[in-house]
Length: 320
Ligand SMILES: Nc1nc2c(ncn2[C@@H]2O[C@H](COP(=O)(O)OP(=O)(O)OP(=O)(O)O)[C@@H](O)[C@H]2O)c(=O)[nH]1
Image 1 (cartoon, protein in one colour):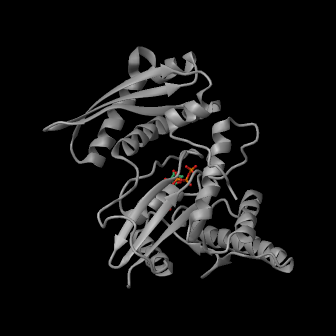
Image 2 (cartoon, rainbow, N blue to C red):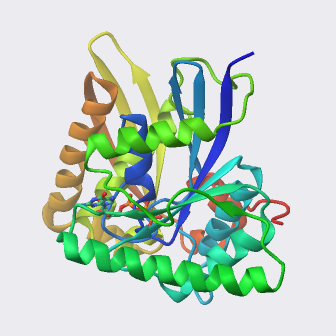
């Protein structure tokens, strides 16, 4: 048996570039990307099959300090850690323009101490700034990581093995760099039978991906705070001969938010609808007829049942 297959957890602080890396790795748009942190709310599996290898990439919500934030944020953190426990290989991503932070030290310490697996430290967005700044960021990350590893090693507590250069620079906007990294990661996978069919892209149903595409537009078009209190539910998804009919409800937390989403004379929801439709048509490769509605569900980000119903978010039973 020469087949290889393994789960790869993509972890890092919010906005580190995890979803962009996932999409670039797959060569397909699966995960939502925006310039606001905590866009990804749930774990998403992306399947990449090439030759004898199948990589199962798990994008996770950015791990963040959730104290004082809604219950949803605590659940998002738990989901990220639960993915790690099940992975064969870990990629920890750090935005090279931000460098090593205290939060990275905290999360990487958790990985080093708890998980007996191989890992890679990736310094992302290396195309975004001048070469000298990238080099500075790389040195800063390398030093932060080195100091942390030495501390934990002295205590005899290191379980996880970071391999290759630490960190490795990557730009998800440069296909040749992504291809190189993909090759490197595929090489690390254990020998195992494939778990998905050769042409599978994800374990998530089409409806989930479409809801995420609509949510992405909300993140892009609405102010700083509002998108975090919004969910999208697909009520109708029907492929007809020449068009796909989609009807979706945007769930908001309070009446005033409903007004903002609708906008003056319906201008905001119209613009959301137009951009979401274009994005959906690109994804589905066919014409889409999209209808959007808005519904108020006070306190939904604090309520376990509504988190499951509206955001598909379920607290993992036991996070090690
Ligand atoms: N120039 C450049 N921008 C990038 C790169 N990777 C990500 N970005 C941008 O960084 C922002 C955040 O990227 P995401 O992929 O959404 O980050 P994330 O880690 O998934 O974020 P969360 O959902 O908060 O966990 C977006 O505006 C991306 O376009 C990169 O390699 N180069």
